[in-house]
Length: 444
Image (cartoon, rainbow, N blue to C red; front, side, top):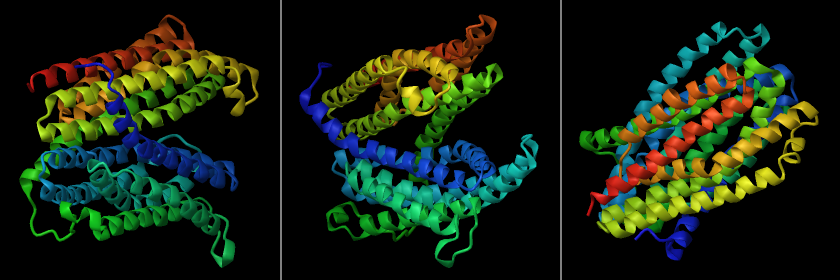
């Protein structure tokens, strides 16, 4: 029952690759912003990095809530309840827009706290203005995510990918106009990048709404935006899945942010090497996010069909695919460990540290792929609360204390901190896999 199945592998990869490309598109958006803002001055780039770090820790909750839509839609589609798919979309929009308003208030509050982060005055002034402008993008971005999750729940992955890729052109053009003041527009510097982001995210939202509402192929799923009533039962289901999903992502991301702070206590070179190795590992992880989302959708479809044998096969084959892909990346990391850091920097000390970290990354790659995909499979059966507790335990009870002990008490430095994080990843991978095995076994 748990053997590798070629059909499951093919179907999973077909769903996964557009999501992975879309994730790369988001990375490109961030990179182009950094490059174009960096040409203004170093202070603007630093302010941009500070704001984006703070924003992401808040917006991750909105993204988590939006992800509740895809498993619910996938289950409804699998069960042949096509009309319910549109209901989940409409109620999801109500839930996500309402929650986004709360996020906007939180972000505006955080803007005033920038004064207390002990940053240079010139950076604080730029950051506060930029953060207020970026707040405008919150609602259109979350609405875009809602429609994206609706489509992906229906196994329609390409439209969001195309929208994200096209939006990079809109963003670059908007930056060119508003950061530098071309074609008679005012040169707004970092603020210009904020306004360009708002225009880009609003355009993304509009493009995906138009596609969903006007597509003839989607009419059977009733994607009309005519909201006649608030269905509190569905809203509660969305929050029951989305809020734990948001906390799960937050616990993991915040753990890596804490690790960066600890590495900063060691040396600038160690922190630079950490950023290089993490950026490289993050590139392979974009592919895994696609596999994870494919696992959510396919597991959800089979749950709706009540085909529990194929449900388990879909989940475990997705986990096997993730492990195989990450094994290959791990081999590449080891082979090219001295070459890859040179893409980022030429300082010998940083390159040597980064090369050592890439060996550690190679060792935890498989477990990182397994934990992310296992989490996606669990979301497909709407099992999110226990995984949230597992994530907290793996990263905050085990990984962070282990990283501190190995890094500072046992004096292994940045390598020790990365080994500590690896222990958390390994634990999460094992517990998610066991959780999926035991939960799906009960379905028979």
